[in-house]
Image (cartoon, rainbow, N blue to C red; front, side, top):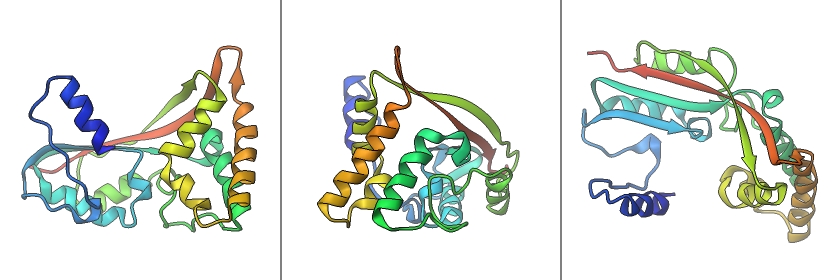
Length: 199
């Protein structure tokens, strides 16, 4: 991901973009050095979201803004939920327990707002937004899931090759149910939650 950021910045002629690899919970940044922080579909996968938000708090200037995007519930995100259920079943694993990192860990009503408030952020809002994944084909959606969705790969990463192949074959079959004459279309729902550090 950092490579793509660097390449895109270079292609856009930007010379003031830098990247830093590290765990969000352990951000080693100067205090009050950022105006804004954005986390898109990542916070729910952090091992300790509260600690990550504390690190963000330290890095933000007074009146600095934060915004996160997380998936809501499995029912509203079948494209995300069904493949995960398939992979877990083939791997003989159970879904994450409440409070554990997972695709839908922060999607229930009020969870993000409480997490932000407990971290000291104010003006916190929670907006539900309907979105859709559109791609030319289900095959391309499968490739994206296999290559870019680390949480999905991790479920079967320690399984025998035959188990992985069977799991991904069933996921491919499920993804084909989202294919239309116009290509791959999967409804989804996210929460967009902005907040601010007090002055």
